Length: 112
Image 1 (cartoon, rainbow, N blue to C red):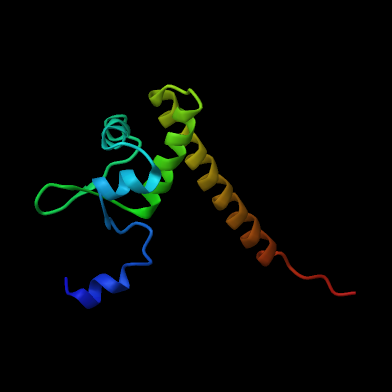
Image 2: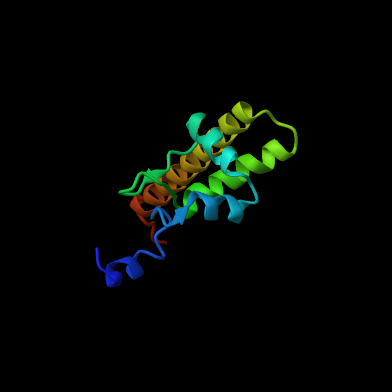
């Protein structure tokens, strides 16, 4: 990948651009917290060629939400489950809205 290719991916929410240290700093958590939510399978960071964890912006949003719940006293396993369910609900709502738009577009127009 060339430098030009990398610049094009800066807007990609799924591009693993952040090291573990930077990711932890960005969400105000420890590296141990990121490892813990990885072990709980909330997020699975990609690995660099050297084996270092890399996180995407999408993963950081998920991690930040889990951290918010843990800070409120929710056990980490429960926080991870809540975040997974919230994410699934959001996806279901998006799909439902898409189906509604498709159904509305397919309805024949009535002329009066």
